[in-house]
Amino acid sequence: MKNWGFKVLIGVLFVTLAFGGMAMAQTAKQAKEPAKAAAKKAMDMAIIVVDLQGDFTKAKKGSLAVEGTDDAYVKSVTDATAKLKAAGFPIYATQDWHPATHASFAANHQGKKPFDVIKLHGKDQVLWPPHCVQNTPGAEILLDKKLFKAVVKKGMDAQFDSYSGFQDDGGKKTDMDKILKKAGIKKVVVYGIATDYCVKATAIDAAAAGYKVIMVKNLSKGVAPETSAKALDEMKAKGITVIEDLDIAKIKGM
Ligand code: VGL
Ligand code: ZN
Image (cartoon, rainbow, N blue to C red; front, side, top):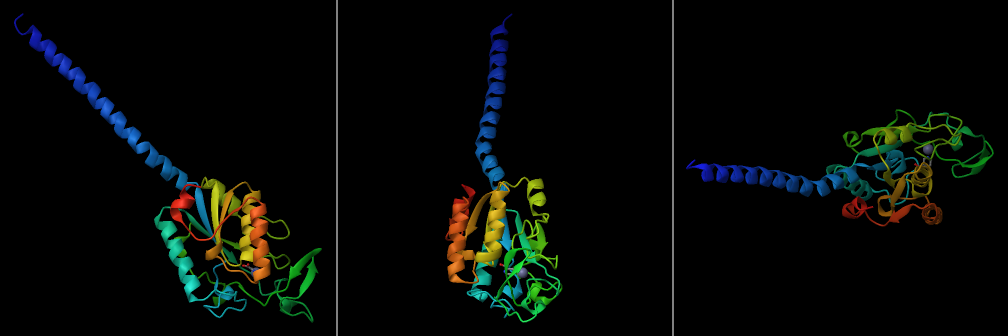
């Protein structure tokens, strides 16, 4: 056959192109893997914005306004949270949500004033001005609710305080752990108000529940400098990573 050689040439060419194409597709797939892995890594890290509520801020002249919670602070938290959302992180919030009869309110104890300490269920309980009463303006979260995958309310039981977003002082669990587990979350970044109470308790309970925890100091404000400094030490002692400022590239690698 005269064109036998031609047929072989065509055959070889076809096989070469086919394998070449497969190899290229494989290379393209491999090139995408690191990006995919990075995206997957980011998705197992969630943000918990703790108690960014009017009553805890000077910005809203709240009943339990924490030092340093001016408009600039609220804006810094708002901007940081929006950036994290844009970077693909799922965002959660906690919300202090007390009945008016709550046992942590000084007004509910005869002869007591705010910041007195009493024994409640055998534990020291700081008494507070009434704050974050359910369905009052001071209980409202100051960030756009659309930022959040879920808002976990706490402190609804009048008999127990609940600084932690995971459980109250009586040991009753919120839905936080369930929600995070269902979403495949392994790491949490925590910031908000107050460093020495709800941020600390939420971060420590997250660590106890097995999450890797990063606490952002400069996106958090504390009730008092001494207890806040102590809170940072306590968190570090529990293996929590305290970072000064939010650095999205840095936390993505954590
Ligand atoms: C908090 C005191 C009372 C807090 C809540 O959000 O840190 N502090 N209730
Ligand atoms: Zn409270």
